[in-house]
Image 1 (tube, one colour):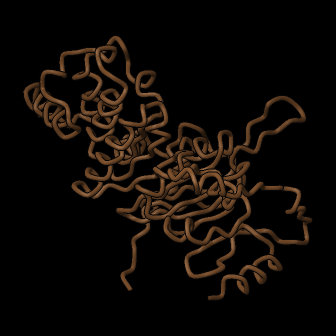
Image 2 (image 1 turned 135 degrees about the vertical axis):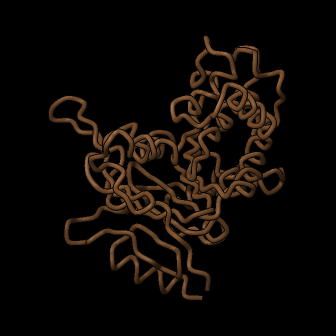
Length: 313
């Protein structure tokens, strides 16, 4: 079996926000997972579960409360010199949820895309800079004429393509896509996701794809992690997650996906997740446990044994 190379390791990551004594919001609560080179890991869950905070903490938009983010063997949240931070910022980029809010309305598209090129000194001359911008526009399905326009002159889908071009400008290894299609029309969403898949193939990119649309996440992701109230509750391949969801919360999420067949939709049974079922005590030792090869579920040792029996075949 081919040994996959880890690009990113998340170890016991915590992101707590103090919202006034004695309140503390545990937005990300002790989660661990790996992302391998060239893959797409999908991160799903309902609004407020901590998935976007996870992405922002990984890329250092937030300082982690505790835990480690290891990228290419180095601790992201460790002390870094200015040059080390510059290199890290070049290798890891982010695509944001709202393509309009993330683009400076006063800047021409050419300057929006070239901002990273300028900061990192990647262009040899003004001509080289513009040539890079033109190539990036064409790479994301736009054309040279768009370089002199402003963000408000574009549709939502086109703006997100500009956002993708900006992220690609510094030749990153890893891109965090934070709900990149949720603000777009359904007809445009598939175009943007297909573009991301194509770019991944051509440039060997690695993605963390954060979303709440389970159907689209399955389409783009190799593996999927499910978050609930700051905790990672299940992690496995996308096919396995859909065929054999093991955690009750994952089962409830999947049961809520609408079906295109009216007859099936009428007879479909919704699963309601009741968190009080998991009324754990300190002695239960709740952690991510491997139930079948590569399929991890947040559970106690007792629950793990029951799940192993249930899914033995």
